[in-house]
Length: 203
Image 1 (cartoon, rainbow, N blue to C red):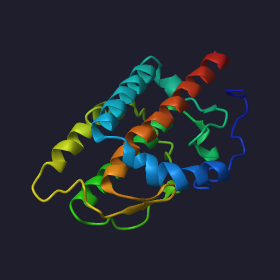
Image 2 (image 1 turned 30 degrees about the horizontal axis):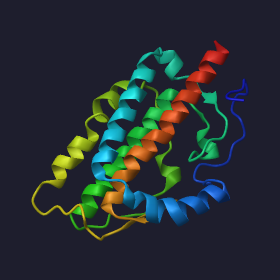
Image 3 (image 1 turned 90 degrees about the vertical axis):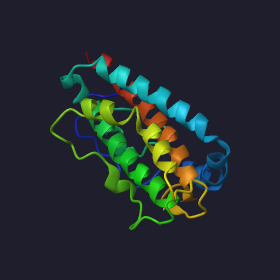
Image 4 (image 1 turned 30 degrees about the vertical axis):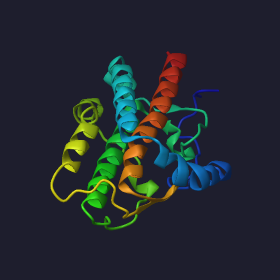
């Protein structure tokens, strides 16, 4: 079942995490191994392609459709609390996370570990009262190019050994956080497709 007519379903609290098997796989393999194997140019290409698809799909919907919450089935990489979002909320989440990851990458590359602790519960959408598509379309497509340009500035070291802890993957260096941009975008691209399927079922 991709969606239901249930309103305000009872889901786990934000930040509750993923099922044990997924958590183990992310911490034992994906985080320490897979994240180091993908070349940055491949990450850039994948991120930009997925971002373009997200914008195209979202642009084909009306603002009302983008604001409608849809309950989707559980999917890999998505917390239970995130299964009842609208397209606009998903875009808001992508903006929050991407801006945060951008800061982490640049901070680690500049030789400084970011203050505070990464918290999954704090990057959930805040049910903003306005449509998120315009801001997403303005910010997301050029993000990796923007980061790449900043990394060329004097004093920046993309190969820095400094780490900042990701709550699911473990300690990540700048290059691994860079890799995460496309992976995270891909997970929510799948979510957006599932939401759209749910919208069509309710039409």
